[in-house]
Image 1: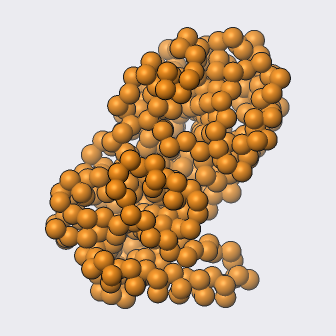
Image 2: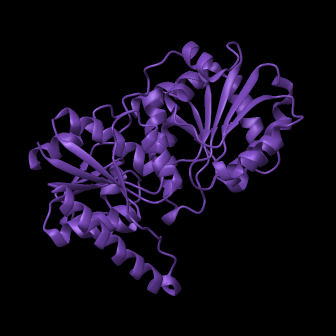
Image 3: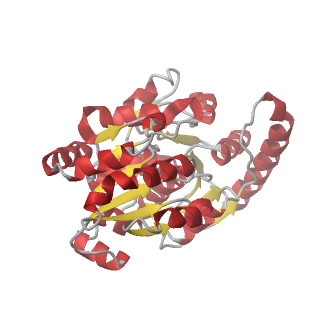
Length: 361
């Protein structure tokens, strides 16, 4: 029995695939600890995992450019020191970095300790930490084949992005009942993501007038991000729509099972979950994502029909509402999108990664 550390804090896009790998690693008889950021979303996601998950907070600060380099270096060294202490305490046999600041610091600590490490990069364009650390990794697992072109000196394997086994285990009827939603109305799910929710929230609210003719046939479940929940709830008041607004939801298996159409950012973790559930989607990449990787993700996923991609800058006026109404009125197209999405699924992603790690542990 070995001990794996999964460093995956900062966003759900890093953490949820890490949880999926942890399930597969534990099935092989090993222990898993998580290194996460101090963000509330990390702690809440672990609490909602429904299993014995231990999370260690690693101090984190993102790169803010050359002017903030002194602060970044100070915090990075503190994070490496903290990660080194925890790695030693747990007698870890290997590290899996899922991306982000916590991943970079934890893998840096593993290199100092001479421990083998693996990386997983979900996005079509790899992040800065992945590019720096890829060459020394036992293997870099990637979600999109396009990513490998940016890592020419690394040992790359295209596995896809792992998703939690809980997804897909609920019927639509059960899910609607669990969420307290109407059984006969189309459900539009809006996912703002842990970053950049505001622009998508505002586009959705601007689009409501274009949907008003379908007010008795459409209901909305809107995950707004906790910072925006009250303002989004206020935006739906008086619209006539039955809209449930949540800042965060740890029952995504029910959300996906109930949805007829998803409007979402194009983080790689979200795309992997949409594929696993075979859901038609309107994808609005977060325009401020590093290296514009969400646009690359959206096109890698959606250009062959799995999703409808539109840049946020074009969602002026009621454009998003118009697109939603058109798609809900075209069941044939939604069925095709669902089939194309399902073809993107990588159901064995977590198992492939866990098996490679198992050989080292």
